[in-house]
Structure formats: structure tokens, C-alpha cells
Length: 179
Image (cartoon, one colour):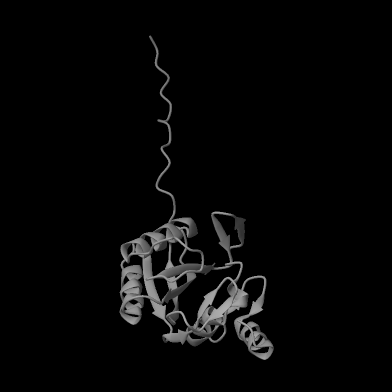
């Protein structure tokens, strides 16, 4: 009886790690201790696996925005932007952001309603996605000064993929009295 002595089958090794990417995360809160909630959320993001750095903008006070426009009678928002350096896939990062919202008592009732914490994935490197589960860049980011101004605070050279320089987008909104 003869045996064929061939090489054993090759077992693929571990996948190479995903390269680090900078994700832009917008943070907002208008219920409870807003500033503490934002700072705690950023600390929680920094502890996520495969996150190596988080840079937070200053905190900005803004008027609540409803479907039909600004609502000066609603509790005001504290907004910020964090630049998150990560190797997490964008879908995984978004899921973890939703979990952090839940940990902070986020209730998803009324659209554009008051909230203890809102975390939006605005951009993930140069990734573009029109998948309804994860739209990148965020489809309304270019229309929101409460996102653009904090983003500029932490990265004055920022660009929104497919839309241009964040500074130009913000200046245009200010000139039109929008956003």
C-alpha cells in the first residue's frame, strides 16, 4: 500500500487587521446633566476595543431642532464632535455607539425629540455607503451647524466626503442663516 505524501492543506492564518481609520462621531444631549453625559460617552468610546485615540471638540450649546425647525422653548442641547481613531468596521462602531446611547437611557420614541444622548456616525474615513442601515457620510451632516462647527473646532482642515471642506459648508449655512 502506498501513501501519497503531499503537503498538508494550508490553513489560512488570521486576517490582517483592518487599518486604522478616523471616524467622526457627533454627540448631543438635551436632558439630564448634558455635559457630564457627553464626557462620559467619550470616555466610554475611548474604552471600546480597537479604538486607539479619541479627540473631543469643545462643547457647544445649541437650540433644539425639531422636524419643523428650531424650538427655543425645548431644553437646549450640548453638542460636540469626537474624532475616533479605530480599526472597528463602521457597522460595528455604529452598533457600539447605539449601545452607549442605550446605556445612557436613550429612548427612541419621537423622531428629533428630546434625548439623554445622541451619537451619530458622521463619517468613517472616505467610506461612502447608501445602505439604509449605515449611510456614510451622514446624509444631513452638511446641513447642521451643530455638527460642522464642533467638527471644525477639532479639525480645522476637515472635509466631508462628496460635499467639500467643512469650513466652506459651515460658512455657507451661516451666510444663509440656516443650519
